[in-house]
Image (cartoon, rainbow, N blue to C red; front, side):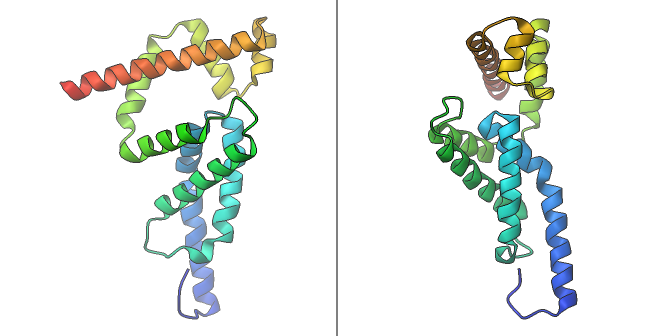
Length: 182
C-alpha cells in the first residue's frame, strides 16, 4: 500500500482505509459480478473469492488511486476463473459474453437510466412472469425448486426464464434507443 517503511500506526491506518474501501465497494462488486454471471448464488461465491484476492493483494493497491476500478478488474478476473472452471456447465456465460457485458458496463457508467427502463419494462411483464422472476432472483430458488413449485419440467422453466430475460432485454434496448434518438 505504500513504498516507504511505515511505522505500525501507519500500517494500521492503511489497513483501516483499505477495509473501509473494500466494505464500501461490496454492493458495486456484487452487482457487477451478478451482471456478468446472471446467477446470484455463483456471484456470491465469486464475490467471496474476489474479496480474498483483494485482501491478499492489499499491499499492491496504491491509496489515492481508484479502488473501484482496481476491485472491478480483480472481480472480472475472478469471474473469468469461475467460468474457466465451470466451462462444462452449459448455464454459465461464455468468456465472450462476459467480455461484452463487462465492456458494456464500462461504457455505461450511469446505469440509472437502465434501472428506470428495467422498472418500466417490468411493469409491462405479466404477474406470472414477475412471480417466476422474483422466486428465482429475489428468493434465490434453484431451477429445480422452481420446476417443482410450478409443476413444470426443469427445461421448461429454463426456457421460460430465458424468454422472460430476452423480452426484458429487448424492451430495455428498445426504450433506451428511443430515449437516445429523442
